[in-house]
Amino acid sequence: MEYVNRVKSEISKVMVGMDREVELLTVSLLFNGHILLESVPGTGKTMLAKSFASSINGFFSRIQFTPDVLPSDVTGIQFFNPKTQEFELRTGPIVANVVLADEINRATPRTQSSLLEVMEERQVTIDGITVKVDDPFMVIATQNPVEAQQGTFSLPVAQMDRFFMKLSMDYPSLNSEKEILKLARGIGSTKETKAVLSHEEIKKLQELVQQIKINDTVESYLLQIVRKTRQHPEIDLGVSPRGALALMKAAQGQAFLENREYVIPEDIKKMVPYVLGHRIILSTEASFTKSPESILKEVLETVPVPVELGAY
Image 1 (cartoon, rainbow, N blue to C red):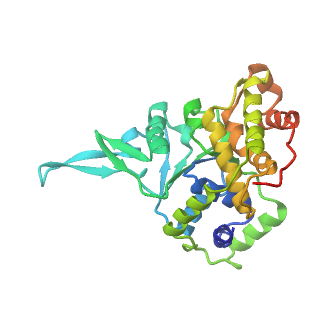
Image 2: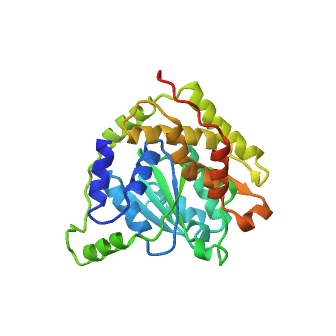
Image 3: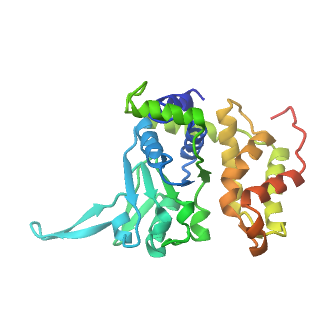
């Protein structure tokens, strides 16, 4: 947790009220996961991604998606150099440590699909040449829910499932917005963030977080939640096995944030909205009156919470 506090402290120099988002970004990073950020414009999505990349000493790149962006604009190309009379490889902005895919749902399905390989396999193929991306690597994609039906292309289910978590950034509280105004006037702000977490430390933390234990009882509780989403009458598409694995990892990450060496049911409950919300599809009737979050809350209420055992 000391390492996470370092990152939170550094990002707080330029942003206010983002502690939970920074925690979840860090957990995703430790499991090589990707984040989908959904919020209205002007809430600091780009600044959050850029500051996070800076705090982990990572190379940051931004891709502004529009309908005319081509897959090669994302992955890269081989171009002919007239001086050398040879083809040369020029990698695209996807080859970075933290990639901000801004307004990803404005890109055409063909361009969106160019991200599938690198998100799953951590490599990109350019005209038959495979290029590995460096560690650490994560994609932070954003989309604007207000214009979800205006000139946009909804992400396919397969791509949504590749996002480790989905975060919805709300408007800041009154006190937080006051602090934002102070930062804008230069009061208590350095305007810059510096690296406080090295790549070697990240690798060490990735090894530690994978050692966090989860016993059979808690694991069964997790699987009951997942299976309930597949049986719920108002859910057309339940959580996939990839989603169950993501929930287990996220629960390990939550235990890590609380300095525990084992997962408890509360860790799972805290992570369900972030990990499962974008992985379920409601029935047509339910989508008019309910949200994925409200359905997941019902699921959690119907699954008995196991009594914690002392031995882990």
